[in-house]
Amino acid sequence: MRRREERMMDSTGMTVGLDISDTYSSLCFIDGDGRVLEEARVRTTKAGLTRRFSTARCRVVLEVGTHSPWVSRLLAELGHEVIVANPRKVRLIAESDRKHDRADAEQLARLGRLDPQLLSPIQHRGIGAQEDLAIIRSRDSLVATRTTLINHARGVVKAHGDRLPACSTKAFHRRVGTAIPDGLKLSLLPHIDVIAHVTAEIEKADAVIETRITERYHEARALQQVCGVGPITALTFVLTLEDPARFPQSRQVGAYLGLTPRQRDSGASSPQLRISKAGDAHVRRLLIACAHYILGPFGPDTDLRRWGMRHGAGTKGNPRKRAVVGVARKLAVLLHRLWSTGEVYEPLRGAPQGAPV
Image (tube, rainbow, N blue to C red; front, side, top):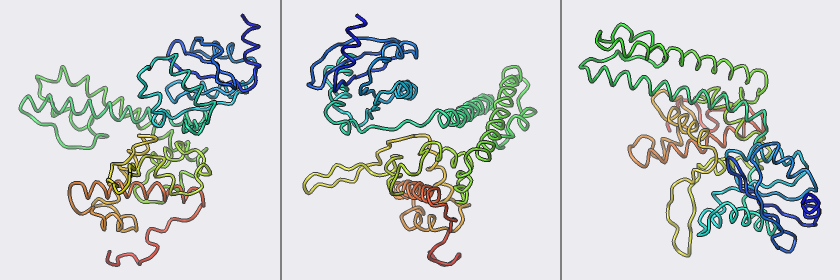
């Protein structure tokens, strides 16, 4: 059996489709003529994949997923040509009437054999960037947890006929202890202790992020020249894109992050569609938050703010939403430009500060 596998792997033009699942992954081997040579399963572990792919080199095609970053790195280290398909683009698999692991593996192999560009291949970030980005996402999870805990405490007290004092989330555990009614202290004081602990962990994560920027990612400091862009947004942007040279033009970053409208033009019809929301949702959410600040009451006078105001930021409803998204898209382009060129940011390039919009 082992000799048979080696003969198969030594065949010229070998393409392998790999449909990854948590426990077992499905394999489909096809030759240069498109004939299926073998269908098999392999354990989704480093040891299992290493044993299976440690023979002759071939092209391996897999889809983006939870396991795809480490699997693609492992297979590349073993010398294989690895193509990671974007499932949003491969409708042939996502909308198939025969969707199961074996069929998906075969479809990946056939598409990879014919033309890899049909798979809209993506590039996973390196292990270092993935580990540092995990710090930011863990912090984001802690912030969401704290918000849920605070909302719970306020809701319980409100249902009791009282209210907790208004304060920032950072100061919540210090300000509200004495305002909790006596009948609710037994249930809520332990709750407040947990909020205090979560707040301390968030502050530790903030310190680690600042240290990462100082020691490893100096380019993130340059992105903070833009008012409204803090260390978390700057570092997330750098770690998500990882290499500014991936984008020959800064304008491509908006589409990469899903901030450009989808297109469905046909004949004389050209409907206005929503943004694609492709790419990383976390960095897109951070850029939208920055855009809200830039267009808000505390945003300074800049070209970005003036553009947003001209496009409906002072109104309500859809015009304002479009203005916010437009500013977020322009902000992504600006950040990439500052990163790739090292230029000094000029808030107002064409008009003096304080001039009418």
